[in-house]
Image (cartoon, rainbow, N blue to C red; front, side, top):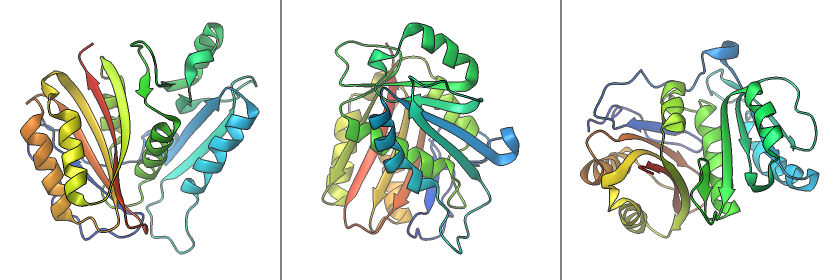
Amino acid sequence: MAIADETASALCRGQIANCDVERHKTDAPSSRTERHGGMLRLAVLAATDVQAKDWARRLMPLIERPAGSSWPNVSIALHVQSWCLPLLGTFDVIHVADATGLPTELLAELSTQTELFSLHYLAPPTVNPGFNWPSETALAAYLAHLLLVLSGSSFFGLSWRDYLAHHNQLGHRRGTYIQAGSLDELRQSIRGLISSGSQVLSALLFLEGYSLTIGNYVDVCQLLEDVLPMDCRVSVCTLTGEEERYGFTLLVTSQA
């Protein structure tokens, strides 16, 4: 697996670097979708109005552009509501948070309004075709990281084409969110989760940390190269923040 981007400058708060460590060539990193002239339209649906307001409180601040920001001109339109209300318009992505109670007839209707449809399940008892998370905290971390990555808040980012490839990979999809006290603990946690990765088809990793460097980033890419199959599609994005902690969100698709 060759590391595609080793020339990114030192990371600063809110910036994201992307490492595509696939063994096959992909398009150049760009978080801008080709649709809607650079405008990315996302919807998050929840079972009730109360839950929808809670998701809006968590996610809406992430798409607000800071004053004087040097972010590229990539705009995100985020809509959050209960699935009990009619959803108007079309979207690039529709996420359903905890889709266990989503009516089948509504699922068919919503599928006509989006290019990508993501059904998320919390602590599911059985295997299902959606995205499986151990907790709402893990799902919230994934959605937050995904919004930041797709917003194009740094020179390097996850390409829309690569996001589509991860999303559309067939198999059993499971995600997790882990917090670590140190970089060593972070690496050990990642290795522990994918140490038996012979059946892994796709891995999307969002790293977060107070003092992550390009060296740390490349180190994690090498770790993934050592344990994952040759033909596994792998993308790594790195975010830094103000809090002195480390963590990661990992979404893995494996053979069903």
